[in-house]
Image 1 (cartoon, rainbow, N blue to C red):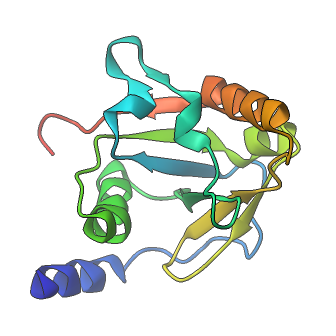
Image 2 (image 1 turned 90 degrees about the horizontal axis):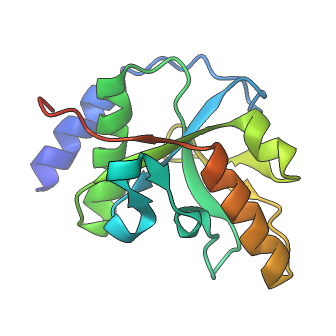
Length: 149
């Protein structure tokens, strides 16, 4: 497993590093989903709970995926999410930085790993937080792995 992760990490090192230090509104982010309770594949819908922030730091982990191919986006998840949580990535929720910002949230770079960021600024009131997560889920695009991957 260590060798596999080392190989993937070195392959991934060849990613373009052309991202601005601060995410711009036209950038895309993705939230990797490894729980089937976070999406409905048959309806192409992301559920709000997929975006709920961590109880530890009140942030939602995402990756900045602008300028990456589909293969590299999925590889990024395999290396930095699936290998860490020891679960298969089932889907991902893609959302633009502009959509995040429209909900009075922000995308903050949080490297390493490369391209990692957090959605921050979640409301402290439960009802408002739930509303933000629901709106973000509605704005998100569900992406499923291709059959050939």
